[in-house]
Amino acid sequence: MQHPLYQKAEYLKSVPTLDLCPEEIVYEVAFAGRSNAGKSSALNVITSQKSLARTSKTPGRTQLINFFPVDETRALVDLPGYGFAKVNINTKRAWEAGLSEYVEKREQLKGLILLMDCRIPPTEIDLQMLDWTAEIGLPVHVLLTKADKLKKGPAKAQLMQLKKMLKAEYPHASAQLFSSLKKDGLDQVWQQLDTWMEYERPVKEKTEDSGKAKKPAPKKKPKTKGNIRRFN
Image 1 (cartoon, rainbow, N blue to C red):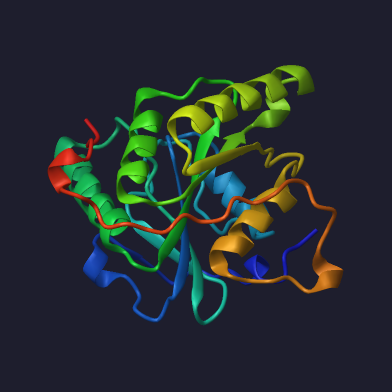
Image 2 (cartoon, one colour):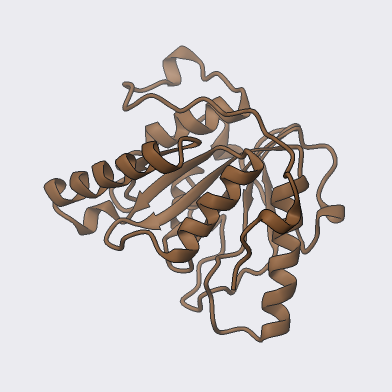
């Protein structure tokens, strides 16, 4: 099963700061998550490619903003894994500054796919990401990854618990279960990407609807940088 658009993803460039981002892109969706949440594997499955995103056993190895265009005006963006500890403090601070500027000021950024391990409750830094995106008006879709590691009952319970929290505290975010191994939830995340990318798949390419995609909220400018919670 392949998506007619995302299977065309190709690596373009990696940049440390906003000013070096490609200017020709109109629609971007970024992928973020704690190190070892399965981000690289998810990107590979979503694009039907084996090694599009670099995978590594060393958390935080990818420390740049990585662009993967799917056509002339759309791109998937792989953000550095957050929460890593195996890099020096100067590298970490530079990463935080570059990422903050990109997420807050990149007008082409239409939404964020936030990956969380379904076996682990949202961490403090996951909640900081939700706080931050709420503050700047950036819509989020959470992938509870590695769903195949749990039985269906517990996995659904984790999803329902997260959805309840999002509805009460983070209405700009939606969520689903996802398994890179079994490709469970693949069509649902494709639908969300299509919505943000303003792309309509040919009818013959669509599979059975596996859930409604959340419409993007209008992106707002940050009120003041001092109000945004930073990573520690």
